[in-house]
Image (cartoon, rainbow, N blue to C red; front, side, top):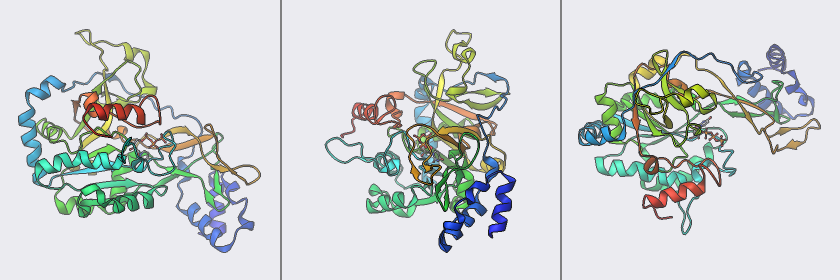
Length: 405
Ligand code: UTP
């Protein structure tokens, strides 16, 4: 892109301030800046929260623990059959910034050990290997990274020999970045030659798999189910055959692992029906009415929270990949240049990042198996260093499950 083209593009979106330092830059920096402006989608930038109007919310039936226990053998067998036939793969979402944890590296390389090293990635791979050992074959593992952590993630896992996993089954792909802006919608500069950007949210995972060539592997290997999971839950079961079998036997196109909420205002997305379609309402969008609603049997009507562990049936994903997803505007601490052109690392949020979320994909699909898991066995998210959903709380839960730290 030439300077004139860049200027024209920026003018359209009210972002010409991004060329403020152009005259000071050397040739290489100018090229980098113009290329980035050429690649960036400025149409995502907006000010304030989006006010998407929601449809009619009603409760969704859940397959609860006792029902799962009663059918465990049947589900297990059906799931193992799919895994042994190579029809199941796992997708690890590891492109996030993990800002709340506050570590510089990718979240997965964080060491949660006490007496010896235990990395988050290691725990996840070991959990997956419980299944692949049982099935007698590896499953393909796709790992999503972003520009901010790609090299560090690939180098770490390669150095650690994928913690015993067969490296030929591991595939990395990158998600895209979105510009980050101040409260008036002006995109920040991170360097005089570089815009501030942030990963564009975990809702992009399937389109990023497509862009990264991963769908060729999916097609060539005959993969029919993708178990997508977050990097931070160190207790979760991955490619869980019972979950796979139950979703398949229920003829659902997506399965969502859920936990019973610990309190009406717990910070988890709640699964429900919206205009008759499965849907997830984020905790910050929950109304008092939803929090206090009761079923006929007197139990809370919206009592199950998602844990970001979904099983998608591949054929239906290709039908929704081009559908528009809502854009979430999230307040964030954005490292940037200040008025004087000096680097500034904010201590509190100073603007917005723009994201699509995987939970919005659920609403685009017709049928969802809501599959309950026991929270103390399968839910130990690491978001913060201490307190709720932290390294500390996850350590306690890992110990409870017999994992030595
Ligand atoms: P979180 O919502 O915890 O976001 O991501 P985060 O960016 O990692 O953490 P904070 O908010 O800055 O502390 C949930 C899951 O989605 C992935 C994360 O890596 C995590 O597995 N994710 C999130 C992506 O892969 N890409 C994104 O753009 C955002």
